[in-house]
Length: 136
Image 1 (cartoon, rainbow, N blue to C red):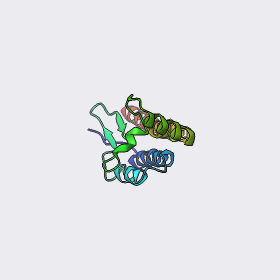
Image 2 (tube, rainbow, N blue to C red):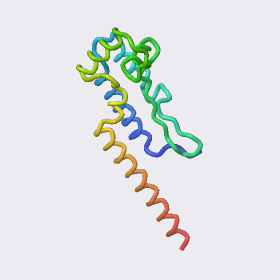
Image 3 (cartoon, helix red, strand yellow):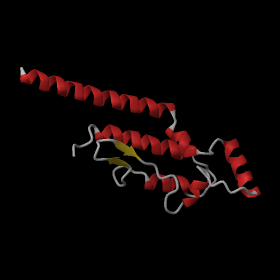
Image 4 (cartoon, rainbow, N blue to C red):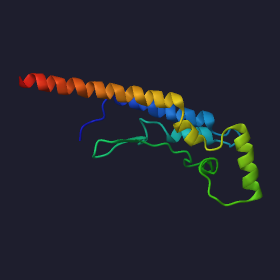
């Protein structure tokens, strides 16, 4: 299988996703931010995966070991209770409800992906042009 082109750029995008999730995570949740940082380090974890069809998957663990309660602030189950309703209302007011989704949908992140894809496209166009010219 071919290696991922420009892995350093892709790792910087993964770090940007992690940092955005940390910035958007609730502040009053104990060690959630620390655990997200530890669980989402591209060099140490499998945050970047390449499949056999050459597609690339970036993963973000928003409820890592030791801070599983992160799932309650992002994509919580539909169980309704007074406590959950109060938690959701407080988190929405502070702007950190669905923090992982907000991090992934950030405009700066979209720009970084566009730049990465443009670089990869340019590389392959140059490679095809070189191969085509070497045939002549």
